[in-house]
Amino acid sequence: MKIGILSDTHGSLSAWELVREKVFKEVDLILHAGDVLYHGPRNPLPEGYDPKGLARALNEEKIPIFFAKGNCDAEVDQLLIRFPLMNPFVVLFVEGLTIFVVHELDKNSSKFINAYNPLILIYGHTHKPDLKEEKNLLFNPGSPSLPKEGPSTVGLLDTSIASLKLLNLKGDILKEIKIRR
View 1 (spheres, rainbow, N blue to C red):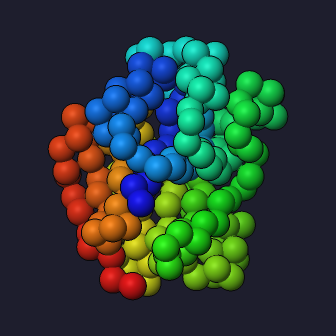
View 2: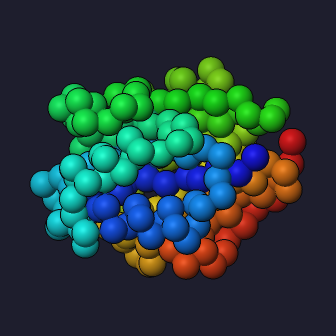
View 3: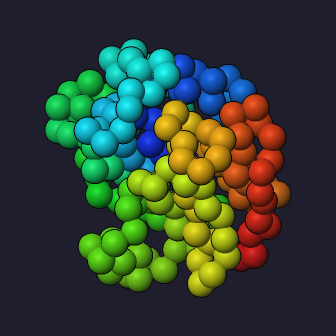
């Protein structure tokens, strides 16, 4: 199974279209770690800012998308998106892997993370990509639309080859970790 992973799209339809066309073209499901439509008061408008268009594109997806609520996501956003958007976190059990998705690593999320003890912990919020192995595999896919400290990035989990990758929007691998079960 191939799982596309991203966070912090902040309403950029053009970033979403590029990701979907170049990197997520053969994924079976998508995990989004929050901050979907709104850019927030501290961020500039991203290139291709079109929250209504992004909502329409997400709704047209034929594969499941799981969202963790970001600090810029609001209840009004849920009116535009057909998938549940307001969950504080998402837990998936996929082919023997426990995957936990949250927007921000903080005290509130840590008690749930400890309860599930996921093999893969996906988070966003910082717009800075990070992929490292500690007690869990910690993965921040960065942001495809408002990156900080580097290029626009997303992630790809391929369970068939036990691989978690950080990729730029051309699909080039920037970092990869092999998953040990």
